[in-house]
Image (cartoon, rainbow, N blue to C red; front, side, top):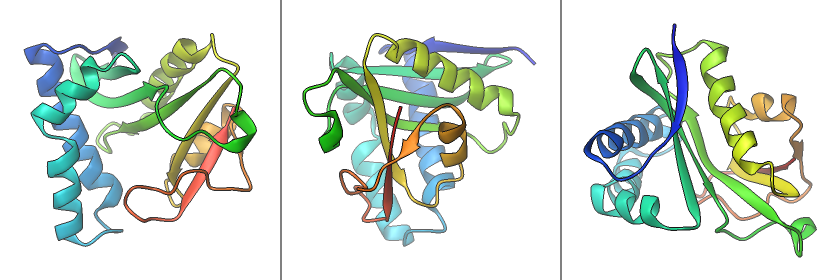
Length: 168
């Protein structure tokens, strides 16, 4: 199995990979937690071509895609945007805004490769934070890499799900 993580820019290949990944991962992540109508609206508003092009071209964001045998398997978005936790006010901090790997790629090496690339990109910062829904099965992955759960959940999850904030 050949695993490689790359930065993504607005190209046909990059957009095709991100459009597929963002939609499929949102469905995998939230299908059992949200009503279908709410999930469909979330996907159509956030993961359409226009929205993704704007997000990829935003200088505050860096998008990564992990490939397994040349097939897109997951993605992450690193950003300086977003309301940071109080404990990070005044510090150089960056956020992993979205992170996921498709269920059909269960090998830990795939998730690890994507997270390791995220952490390498975030190295110049004092802290990294993320806010995820509280039942996300990837939370232990982040905790095993040095992220610590915070007392406050940080910014509320955009889908009105219980959220947890982790800081490294």
